[in-house]
Image 1 (cartoon, helix red, strand yellow):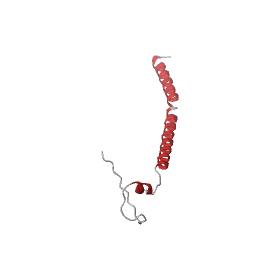
Image 2: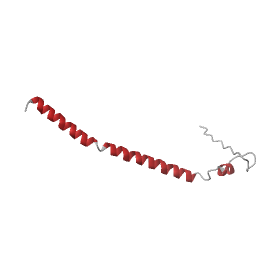
Image 3: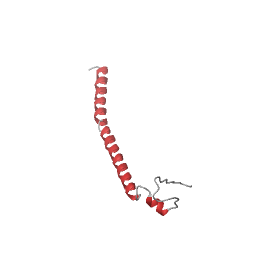
Image 4: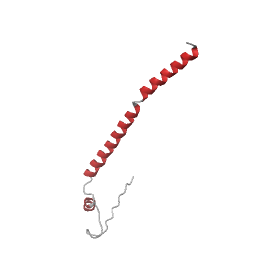
Length: 82
């Protein structure tokens, strides 16, 4: 076997080993992506349940309000003063 043939055989062996070892990386990316999505869904549901009433009546009762309570439009203003 000539030197060039040995190099070709060695290159093909390296390609096969890198192809087989890197094949599992895609699976890890999929599992990681699913885990991130699940964590995001759980966080959204948890914060949604903790926020109280979704129509903002708890905020209006706790804070300052103007106008009638049964008005057809309710405006809520949030501010972060830092």
